[in-house]
Length: 240
Ligand SMILES: [Zn+2]
Image (cartoon, rainbow, N blue to C red):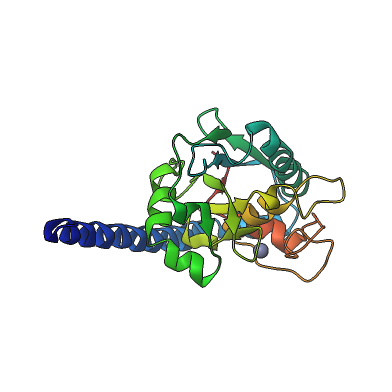
């Protein structure tokens, strides 16, 4: 690799990192703004007022280094259907496809950095590198000033040491690995990791109750009233 290629790579990497930083900062800003704006709705929810709201979701399946999809679109359906049922039945939130398309397989092999990802600090660091760049390039976009922004789920090969990961309000995407699409399972046998990670993206944190969706290892799918109202107060969950 020549000198000018190295310089080009350096500036390309720096640009991707800066782009990740700006997007994370923007997401935090719009999260705070939308939560404050939605405070009356949050309080009304606690009083039992919860008319139907919407959450836009896209699930993108990566391809391995040989171009083979990690899963079939049909195999992803049970996890998506569970999330739809949980959010509709417990939160009054309808999960909708973005642009009429809920599940899609991405074209071409994904970069190695996006196929095997980390969580917590690793995921945060990787958001500024090749993985974050790939995820941002393929994110479902939409909404206005963060309001009604879709959540994108990337089906990856492996989330190291876990089955899924979310950076909460920092990013509009979460990752779920292939085992996470099959296990751990909800009591009805459907995988719950996707619903768990999407709930993180909508602001929910972990809970100790094994019956709760936010208990890390499952198998629960229940949500409490505070969780329901905080979920509904997310910028991803909207009336429009
Ligand atoms: Zn979790």
